[in-house]
Image (cartoon, rainbow, N blue to C red; front, side, top):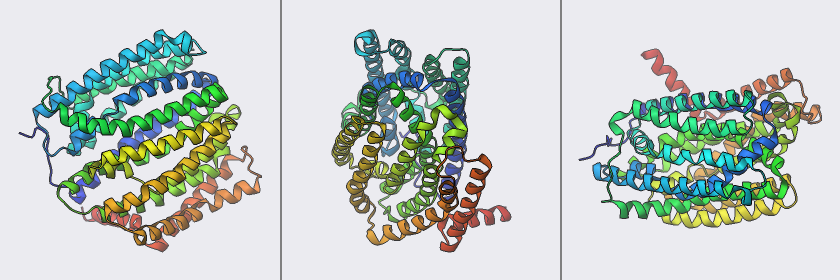
Length: 490
C-alpha cells in the first residue's frame, strides 16, 4: 500500500498554491539570510568568516558522500510503501553515522591538517549536523512528494529563524567564528524537531533493507552528481584559502552567500514545486516541452535582470550593506552575477535528468563539468581572487555548451523554441539595467554613490522592466492578469 499521497498530476490551482507557499517560505528565508548576512558582516571580520569557511569546506568534501538524493528517490518513486521508507531511513542513518565519525576524525587531526586551530573546534560542533538532519529526511521527502509546501515552508522558517537569531546573539557576545558553528547545530536541531511536530505521520524510525539494491543504484548515480558538485565547491574553497589566503576566501564566501540569497531563494521556489510536477508528468507519459519553456521564460525574465542589476550596483550595494571594509567584495559579487545569468540559461537541467531517469548520463556530465570547473578555478586562484572568478565564468560557459543540447532532447524542444525566449529576456534585461548603468557610469563606478540615487535607479529600472514585459505581452503579465481576475471573481 502506498503510504504517501500519489496524485495524478497537479491541477493549475494546486500548482499555484504550491508556488504561493514555497514563495512565502523562501521570501521569509530571504529576509532572514539577508538580514543576518548584513549583521554578521558588521560584527565578524573576513578572517573570522574564512576560518568557518575552511572548516565548512572540509565538511563539504566529506558530506559529499552523503549526497545520495534519497529525498528525490521518494519523490520520483512510482509507489512508496513502508518497506521503501524503512530502507531509505536505514541507508540514510547509517551513512550519517559514518559521515559524523569521519568529521570527528578530521577534527582530531586538526592541528596537523589546518593552519588555524579554530578550524578544529568548528569541526567538532559541525559533526553533529549529519546525524541530526538524518531524522528529518524521510518526512521532508514525503511532504514534498505530496506538494505540502505549507508545512515545508513552516518548518524551514522556524529552524532558520531560530538558528539565525542564536548565531547573531553568539556573535554579539564575542564567540567569533564559533557563533556560526553553534548556529548551524541549532538550525539542524530545530529543523528535525519542527518536522516531527508538523508531520508526525511521516516520521520514520523503522529499519529495513528490502529495497537497498534499488536505493544503491539510484543513490550511487546521485552521489556522482551531487557529490561531485559539493566536492568541486569545497575543493575550490579549500584551494582558494590555501593559495590566496583566508581573507580572500572570506571575501569569496561572503560574495557567494550574498549571490546565493537571491539565486537560491528564487530557484528553490520553482525547483521544489516543479520537480514533483515534472515527475508526475513523466509518470503520466506526457511531454515536458510546454511546461519547461514556460519555466524558462519566467526564470530568464526575472533572474537575468536581477543578476545584471546586482552586478552593476555591486559596489554601492556592498558599501551600503557591509561597510567600507568589505568594498573588495564588489568585484567577485559582480562576476558571480554574470555567471548566474549563464546558469539560468540552462535552468532546471538537474531536475530534468532526474525525472527523465537519466541520472547515469548526468553523472558523467557532472564529472566532466566539475573537473573542468576545478581546473579553471584553481588555475585562476594561483594568480588572485579575480583570476579565480574568471575561471568560474569560463566554467559557466562550458556548462551551457554541455547541457543545452540535452535539455532540448529531454523536453522535445529545439532552437526555434529557445532563441525567441532568450531574445525577449535579453531586451527586458537591458531595459531594466539602463538606469543603474547610467548612474554608475556618471559617478565613475564609485561605491559611495548616494543611496537615494541608487534606490531611484532601481525603481526606474523596475518600471522599464514592467513596460518591456507589457510590450512583449509576456506570460508573467498574462499570469498576473489571470490572478487579478480570479481574485475579483472570488
